[in-house]
Image (cartoon, rainbow, N blue to C red; front, side, top):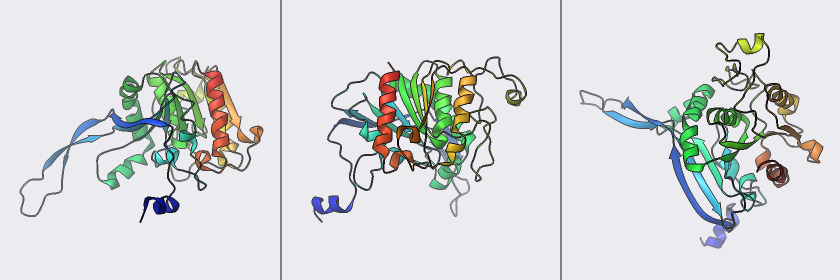
Amino acid sequence: MSVYEISEKISLMDLSEIKHWGYFHAGGKYVHTESPRAEGENTSPVKHIMQGQLYAEVYVPYHVTKKFPVIFLPGNNQTSLTWKTLRMDARAGLSISGNTAMSYIWLMFLSEDEPMRSWRKTRKNNKAMQLAMKEAAAPLFEKTGPAVVITHSQSGPFGWIMADTCPGMVKGMVQLEPKGPPFHDDSKRRSENAVWGLTEIPLHYVPEVQDPSELRRESVRQLPNLSDVPIMIMTGTASKHARYDHLTADYLRQAGVKHVKHMKLADAGLYGNEHMIMIEKNNLEAAALALNWIEKTIN
């Protein structure tokens, strides 16, 4: 089969604007594990396995025009293909469509060098994934420097955690239908709730919170490490998030975040979107809204 025949059968990505591509890992730690004992062996072999590391792919365009790189984060049960997948008509997905506007594009997901069954099990554990993101945030920013963060769905808490853990490093954030509403997880498949308001793990509140139940009983606490981060929350018209994303925006404002924009796609003339905005038919139009907001808001 010729290259031309392959290109007709498979959706391929146009990388003509990309000058460099690379990858790296950040965070993680080595753990000791025992493999199953083989027949005839007296002891189980001990392995040193890296767990909880973050894997990133790097795309650098020929024409770097912006100061900050862009970090794309997929949700727990997704991979970087969430951002790289092409539309059926071969127009580029949300992340690649912006490659000439931003200085870098990063695509990443948290992984574990364990058997696939263990990896999937951990990725379904919101709290474990959020703790891993918290550990990986500083090593990540050591490599990237300050950045703009774009999240989707269950990676929404990763954005809050990155900004909270590394103050000043998140220069802006676009949240595509982040996990919510506050204090809840609107997924019948999950038993966990965001007991810390936006996350399952502690955030830095002022006054200090000793027990997350205080956030429900007492006056609204402030999130000082997020207060100066410009944030856009983008919501599709036909998505279940249309019922409650405004509550996340309101929670952030009440917590002292100064620059919160809730972008309802219908208000911009984009209709019919459900939850996977970045791979839907009007993804380029949605991308343009996000990129225009980034250019106007983030310096």
